[in-house]
Length: 381
Image (tube, rainbow, N blue to C red):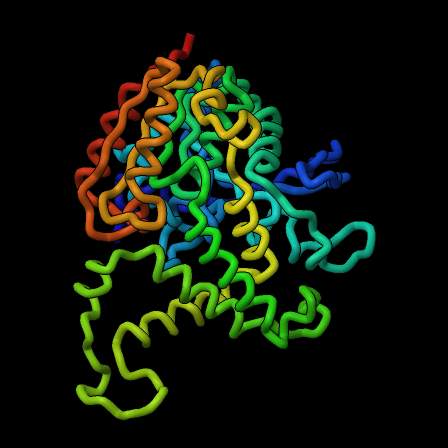
């Protein structure tokens, strides 16, 4: 893991926050009269503001994409492998902006923040958020920072969906769009996984219809199960077999229902640790945003028609072992771009790590990503 003092690390970082007082009309028909977005920045904005890169995060990530908060931190931001001096998103060249999505649980307005009308946590009363809503709020953040056009909007998984929506809704406001391990819509199987995860949370006795904050409790078991299920889908069968096989913790079968296999222990640990750092209501919101994303639905389910007005250049990356967002889904995006004669580079990276491959320093992935980002032109004139 990179050291905090390493020359390719952005070092110590401090989150920033901005309160928006202009009401935000949402896709669901409701309006947020005001809201806050927390974000981090890395690098320096150049004179003509032409070197800004927006990072869109995935379901359980947040604004802390790179660097450390203190010298005592054991782990850096979630995309440390890709953001920093000399890395694909080179902070010697780019000014990087990484917000926590609206509805998140790490500082942006969401279910666990106070509703100004009641002075109590929003809880389940926080409105349903869509990918388009996130993009609209991110555009407003860009305005606050004086960024009229992004050099690139970049995201993996759910973040890649946001990057796509950016290219559709604000075609003149980004020059490049980087879509990694994503899809133009979820398959029925993916929606099914999300529904099982939500039901695990909703059926937890400690959920209290989403008002668990007032009951001083957490739907721990439900959120733990949701995370365990999700984590299985993020890994490939090969990765799980290589890491755990059928290894027994005690070297023998105990004929019971306690943890016996190493993979059981791993999943329980992942689920338990997730409960301590994520909010159940936010998990419900994020999975619904995933389910609802389908830009082609407004164009008679014609993805090519949805992409007709795009102006950005594209990099699309998929991973061979990613069965949650398979390469076939990325190729659908590429085909729709080519149907419109858009400029697109596509790379299908051979990797055994599954969907989580985009978070890992896989050499071929890093090289491909870096080669593309190095060719993004930045002018200081």
